[in-house]
Image 1 (cartoon, protein in one colour):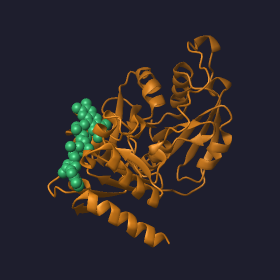
Image 2 (cartoon, helix red, strand yellow):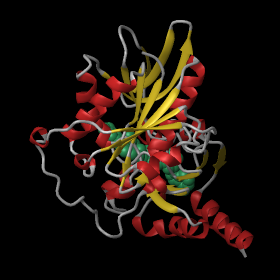
Image 3 (cartoon, protein in one colour):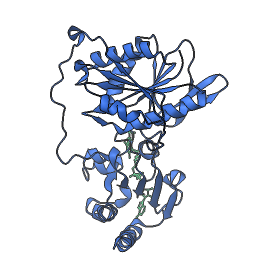
Length: 326
Ligand SMILES: Cc1cc2nc3c(=O)[nH]c(=O)nc-3n(C[C@H](O)[C@H](O)[C@H](O)COP(=O)(O)OP(=O)(O)OC[C@H]3O[C@@H](n4cnc5c(N)ncnc54)[C@H](O)[C@@H]3O)c2cc1C
């Protein structure tokens, strides 16, 4: 067994963004190990998506089609992925740490007598092989996990750990794979996918996020941060106390018990930078922090910091953005 196989996630013919991050991770890992990188997509009618991966810097793409993969069920996905892994025989299977993967990947790993090394933030390769890094205790500790014993090994990657736009090139061979799935083995009957309320936001897809914390003092003051977000064409997000207070809906919370985001720009306004907040946004490409306490931990992860009163800084920034956009 050799090589790195990335099993990617799609829904209705569109990639989950974390899949493309995992694809980048698989390419880099295979490169560092000097082995082949391949990618697979599961579903019903995924040939077009698979074709799109052909030029993405992997050597092989598996299009795994079956009518019982049209809607996600853990039984069908675990069965299909198991058969694929036995056929493709990779040493390492990388997956994006999505809700779906959390659901079926432990079962998949167990079928190979393995554990899933979940939610990894990175890896390195040394003389003994790859070492994966995962966070413990809400990000207070980083643990190195060395894969030992017989492969395949199963690893899922945290959202934002790799950049999706680190594109590759090349022309991969596309292999069609039809798993054998017995309808009687599927124990769940999926109904229509759940759609959250119309106005629900997908912060993970936002390119710019302006996030507000307890420094804003009261609900009515959020308007000034909202105006900055509007001027920038950004999504508005928040730290947990803001959502706990009901000042913004829970869906806008970033952090360990909220969303994990990795926008191009994350502007933290009046946020101290508690570890539970940092784990949700530290993958952002550029972090800007505005805080009146120059010792606030948020400045340790910030690329640009403004130590000042947000009630002066934010309106001035909004004005400057508006002027620049005129
Ligand atoms: C199990 C668990 C899960 C959690 N999950 C999350 C989570 O998902 N997301 C999350 O965010 N938190 C989470 N928390 C809470 C977290 O520990 C922090 O309490 C929280 O992130 C703090 O929010 P904050 O930075 O907005 O507030 P504070 O820590 O109170 O910071 C406010 C900041 O505003 C600054 N400030 C005040 N006035 C001004 C001003 N006029 N101008 C500029 N700056 C100003 C202050 O200097 C301070 O740094 C969780 C905690 C636990 C225990």
